[in-house]
Amino acid sequence: MERELIAIRIRGQEYRVRNDGDAESLQRIAGYLNETMAQVEERTGTIDSLGVATLTALNLARELVELREGGGVPADTGRLQQLIELAETALEGAAPVA
Image (cartoon, rainbow, N blue to C red; front, side, top):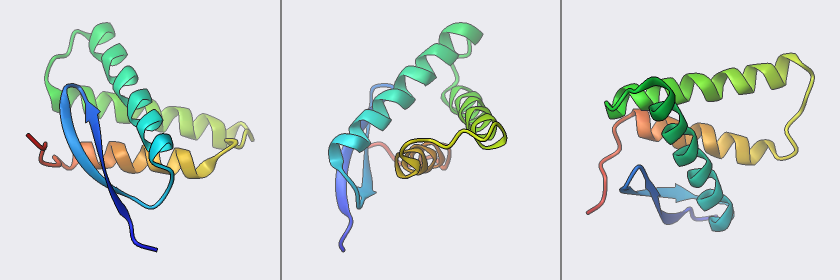
């Protein structure tokens, strides 16, 4: 199955992400990531994109660890994996699309 290239917008920047799942789901995940990054920026006063991305990744990793250690299994682990991959892409410095 060929992976589709999907345009998503995070913190005002457009990124093209390869996706082999549901495009709507990826958009929701990107929206969740964007909202979480905005919350981190607001709470910490951090404006540096890398700092916000790192703190957001830390928060999302904490949520994941709590789910795993608490015995709670996410309803859709595929969606959670997409969110993790999306955060990793942002941290890797994916080039924004103009």
